Image (cartoon, rainbow, N blue to C red; front, top):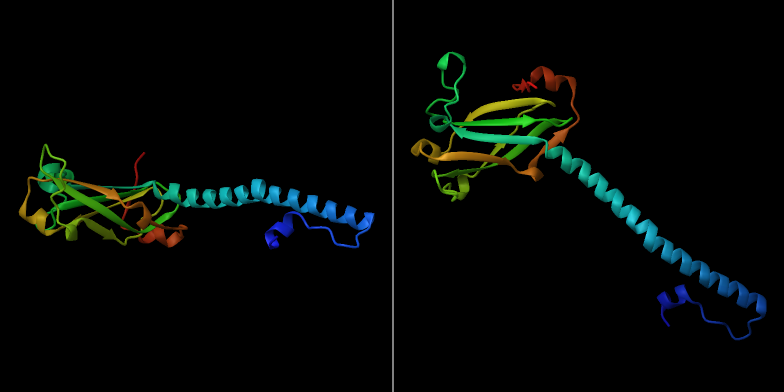
Length: 187
């Protein structure tokens, strides 16, 4: 019998009296009950704690969203009819942070498709954007971006999706609100 077997049931010793037998049997029962308690209660509690901690940060990152559009197909204009993005930087990228923390950086997976198709026509080296701008809670950040395909083809429909695992959220500080280039989200 190995060490694990001895943990669950210690064998009797040769010259053992009734008191030693009683202590041995009670010790065996105690170790068995303790083992079952650890397996059925402590291990699930540790797992639940780790899951809750992971879920809290994961859920917070889901509150960061992004959209990407091409100036030729979106019709997005500022007041007085002026285009938001020019021909040199034709893609409009909008990131909204609806979490309770400040967004420090994010990667956005972008795709472009021809109308009526679901196939992504962007090459692999143009399918993501990394933004490193402070966006405080309940703020959005808009910027213009370009890639080779957007400059060559204006007929494509663009979309963007936040890569959830790239979202870097930090506790908000006063300077985040003072120095941000973002705008408060209007409710």
